[in-house]
Length: 102
Image 1 (cartoon, rainbow, N blue to C red):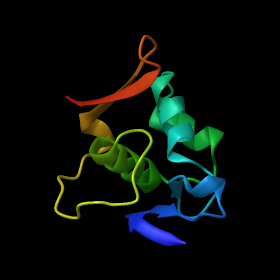
Image 2: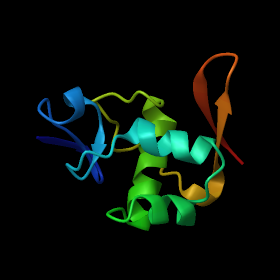
Image 3: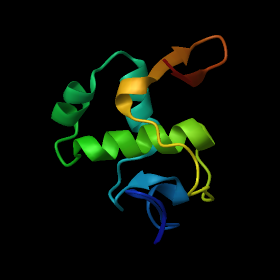
């Protein structure tokens, strides 16, 4: 398992090597889908009780740099985003999640 970002891990034996939270089988794309459908951070924490608020912030930060699909490479000097300054929206015409800063 490789830790590629704060709280984000990539392990070829877990979820096909897709970025996950802290080695658990909770993919970043699944969390972003929940947020994009309109769930609040608190609702996501209820749906996925193994998560912590810091996990959501890490997912949003990672996705704001690497996109929803993620990359195993990260730039540690990149600006850190938090849930309060990132808007997640689903773009059905593109079948993509869009992340924008407020």
